Amino acid sequence: MDLQELLEMGKQERDRQDLKQTRIRCCTAAGCLSSGAAAVKNSLEAAVTVANLEDSVEVCGVGCLRFCGRGALVEIDPHRILYEEVTAENAPAIISALSGEERNQEGLPVQGDRQHPFFALQMPIVLENSGKIDPERIEEYIAVGGYQQLHHVLMEMTPQEVIEEIAKSGLRGRGGGGYPTGLKWATVAKMPKGQKYVVCNADEGDPGAFMDRSVLESDPHRILEGMAIAGYAVGANYGYIYVRAEYPLAIKRLEKAIQQAKKYELLGSQIFDSTFDFKIDIRVGAGAFVCGEETALIASIEGKRGNPRPRPPYPAESGLWECPTLINNVETLANIVPIIREGSDWYASIGTENSKGTKVFALTGKVCNTGLIEVPMGTTVRQIVEEMGGGVPDSGTVKAVQTGGPSGGCIPAEFFDTPVDYESLLKLGTMMGSGGAIVMDENTSMVEIARFYMEFCRGESCGKCVPCRAGTVQLYELLSKFLDQQATHADLEKLKALSYMVKETSLCGLGISAPNPILSTLRYFSEEYEELIQQDSLNGKVTV
Image (tube, rainbow, N blue to C red; front, top):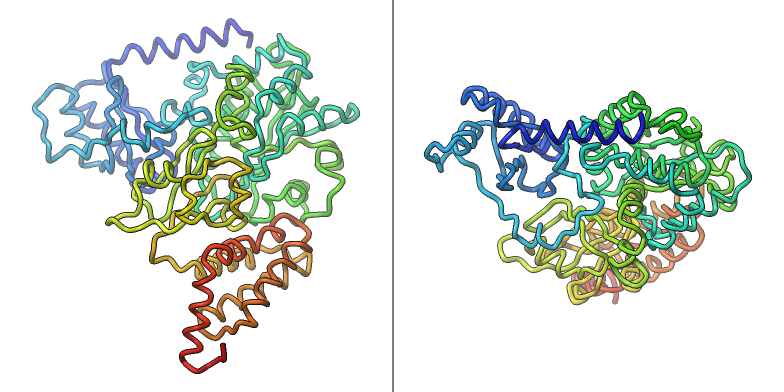
């Protein structure tokens, strides 16, 4: 395929869509499918046929429409009417309303508000195609400009220029650590010529996190194009997407996207008649949380047990099969195409001084509005939780929000005016993580929360190093002792000391960060630990 053919394919798809007066977009991401979206789509198609509107109305499946807690979601173009909690039984009423017949209000689902802060405060860059295109049709991705940036870098930029553009943008890795993406790319690029790899880390395993899954389900070609651009920049000709088996829909759509891209010669040999070859394969993981760690992920791809290894050497120097390997997560790679398209200055103008661009969060927990949000770096926690999330249901009080999953910590309500970026969250004792944001209300026991995450880390420890393998078990048992009201002040000191020991001596990031929820809750909610001891004292079981 050449550029002219690519542009013509996009035009044909846009012309095809323009033939329809109305386009009904049904969310077919995993969240809405669990709420019956497949039946909704089928019923809408049947209702269109019954109404004899096939020539003017198109019903299509799209990626995530973001308001996941109100699924199944349906949006109607061109007026962008959003319907929430749609059922198959609503389909005839929706179609009747389209055809100008008198509305049967009882049959219509609830209409959403696109002006609500949940939507109005978002800045979709990573999610710009999510909910708009059919992720299973490459034609729709090409119609919105897909693969044009790959052509641009292959024909008009040197690999060094691509790396400089990414570096100037200020993009930092969205997997949690926030390492500068351009610097990582430059490190791989400067390695001696020879076999190199690009790996997309799609092993999203934090409880409550579903950002990467939604991107893969909603816009898989965006990831493929980002990986190909990365491969060109660092000198790699092969890429792997490491995705957990719990994401079957994402895997299915990635497989289909790869087949389509290969069919149109957008992956494979001599892409756009250049000298650049790039192939992508999928490796399905068994769901071990530790495989989100780079060296464990590499071992798993190589067919070994997913255990981490000491670093250095880092994967950029010696990674997959001891070859230089670039590893970026899904959201990082999804940012590449818009940066190349709009320019590094545009991207760097968004966000804070040291954290550029936007961040996708999965907003969940005890909050009115749950779903996916993408906001500029620097948006305050209060805007996210109270304005976009709508606060706690039934006029409850927000107590804290957990970011970074089991590796992160909690942010108490008194710090909700903090602008969200990498540095500000670290100062609060938590981290950005991959983007999970779990809201807790006044009835949440923070000791119980700490034990929940420790139970998770205990179960997910690979067992290779003693501090993590034995330390997480001991920490879990200590926390249980508090919740059973059997703890003493000596146990409180032991809990602190053991947390720091595990943090400072574990081998990999999972063990190093495992005590964070304990340290965070001790920092802000130590009275809850004390109260459990005091209650115990009142029962005469211990001496305070």
